[in-house]
Amino acid sequence: MVRKVSKPKKKGTTEKSFTDYVSDATKGLVTLAQSNKVADRFRALNALVFILVLGFIIAHLWIYPQSLWSLSGFVVLLFSLIASLLVGVYGYVSFLNVLAKRKSNDVESLKIGIIVLLVAYPLSFSGLIFSIRWLVYTAFGLIPIQGLALCCQSAKWDTF
Image (cartoon, rainbow, N blue to C red; front, side, top):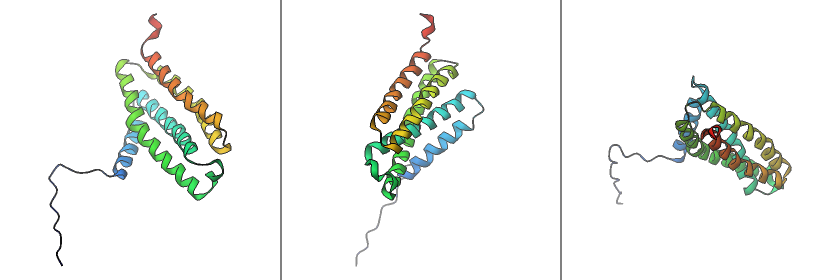
């Protein structure tokens, strides 16, 4: 029997697995939450609520209303929360960091963003639990409005 010999990998070329990305995302969120800066903590809170809202929206789109309370429904909810964690940390936190570079004191814009997300959170959760589509769609519509509010507040619209 012939055994196939695998070639050794080159130094410095490591392939990341899916769990490595999830681990890095959670570490990034935890470091933001444990920061001494108030703006970083607001970014972590914004990202956490965004992750939950997006996870509920994705779960509602994947499953049927009656199957939420089954084992497959919980697995779909878990995978949608993991997917929204990756989108939230790698996409949304990067968006917040870009806005933070534009404005030195971005706490006010983050406060506006968290208010809009805290309105979207119970809408998406209630829409998922009670299978009411228009609540989920309203929560989904509040996400771009929240991003627009962050951009408008960050662009110093008070000079006009």
